[in-house]
Length: 238
Image 1 (cartoon, rainbow, N blue to C red):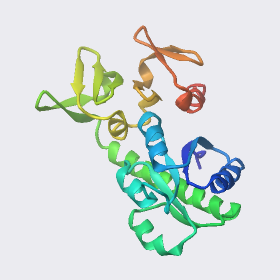
Image 2: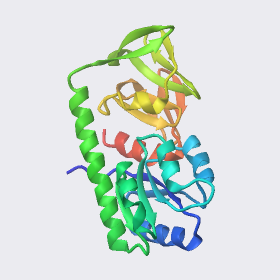
Image 3: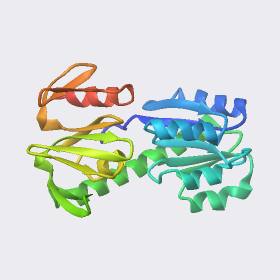
């Protein structure tokens, strides 16, 4: 079985002790990276808008914006494990397709089980993506009011500019209004790798790499700290 990926997590709870307990438990589990520990949903929104987040440990009963409201507002690709002192919210939590629902006080064993649930969901999703992508070698993107077919073999790298993308091809560049995360989900991991929140590259187009940059078609692209461990681990296998 392949090793588990590194999970980038947020802890969101208005109680300091609750955040500390979860952080202490997570520090004992491999492949967990705590991006931030937030005392409110407002603070958590800031991190989600600027960093790659895979999983949120989310208290439900918080001031200003409740955990339920926060979960409804974020990208569905970001998974949620609800944490609360109240059983009353369990049904609503699972209706939002939460990975798990943990009642405080949270034990290490129970949190470990929730993490295992996340990894199982991740592996099922990956198998589904591999199956769906194996039957095609292209995608369609919208550009200038048309849907344009792009062969995977023609892509050199993809560059994000906030609300639009530049898809750099061998002969031209296509501009499309799409998020980099949404197009990443459509690309086969055997051919492409994300190295930065703003860059996805074609693996076979790599000329050279260091711990800080990847050179592709004589252009040096940065490897961000968020992706560095995964990217270097992958490249060093070759």
